[in-house]
Length: 221
Ligand SMILES: [Zn+2]
Image 1 (cartoon, rainbow, N blue to C red):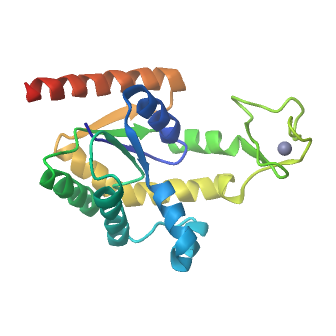
Image 2 (cartoon, helix red, strand yellow):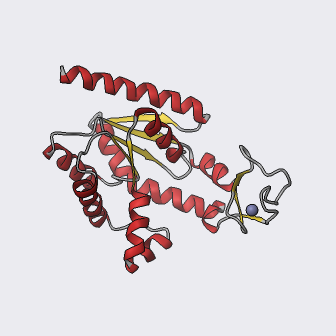
């Protein structure tokens, strides 16, 4: 069972990915992680990653497929997060999995409105001393602006400021909208409202995955 989890910045897809992987024993393939590993060895990639941009579409496809072929060659039960983002990437992944007798069983789009994304991200503050993160809504520091752990000053990352969040959000929409529309037309997309509490969303996602897993088992019989 392979799953693709799509979601805008601040949709909470990282958190939900972890919950699902833990619950169902899925391998969490996060392209953020692949990109960071590549950046350690490759100066050009490091610049792309540091600037918050995406690795070019076809190059990223190559890295992911290479990773799957060599480091995850049993290819079972993967949750893809951050890839595919484009139709070409989706088709390349599907083709590759098909060649191994496997496929993509579920594509979820976790959706939050831009205002909600801005609200969530701009409530995120980080200690400039120790890097501890706080959320003013869900996990505030005991004393405003001060780190509970080390007493350091809490600051906001530049790309977490409202204008930057809006840009990141639009960037996501412009890039991934093509894929979302394509999957929607093919009847392959399941949209999930991401503007709800984490546990409510998680319970919806778990139900979805269980349904797909049961279908899968019946197919094998
Ligand atoms: Zn601190």
